[in-house]
Length: 202
Image 1 (cartoon, helix red, strand yellow):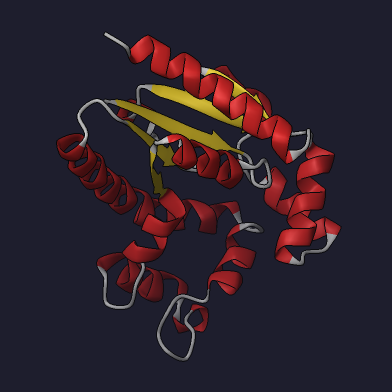
Image 2 (image 1 turned 180 degrees about the vertical axis):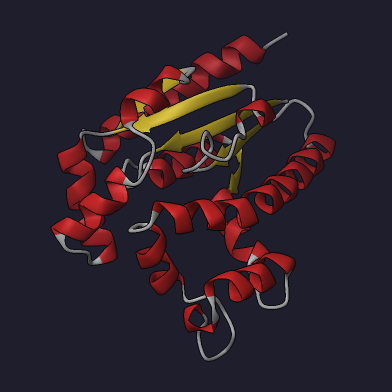
């Protein structure tokens, strides 16, 4: 089995690339979905977040107020580091369980971990290859403003709060640029997939 770490900056198009890979037969583990699970009310990470950041970051039903906490961590590097220290170890543990489950089901398959913070969370040792999704900053900015209804200033803060693109691409086994239209991205993903499957043939 091959495990691919799929990463890239916010707004780069990771989810689109992950969707295309799933259509081609990959099993996809979405680290953001796992992250939401580990902070469900009553879980250890939820308790730590409540105790460290305070009840003002909880919704009336006890769930994490993701928008409020997001606004804090994208404006405060120290708060971001505290949150990552709470959540990253538990996210990694859950992802490892998922990988092992898929390994048992399909030993010759491909598992893709879609993880914006793959490198920041030190998850590179969990994967065989790192595929980095890129797009020019102005394209990412526009996507982010439209997708999350953010001002240009808010969107830019979120982009700049992440690892710089030039550092991310240094770790890349493969780079997929999504600056073009969907069909161009789909074609790039298909080419990468076919090359990968070709290498996996006995």
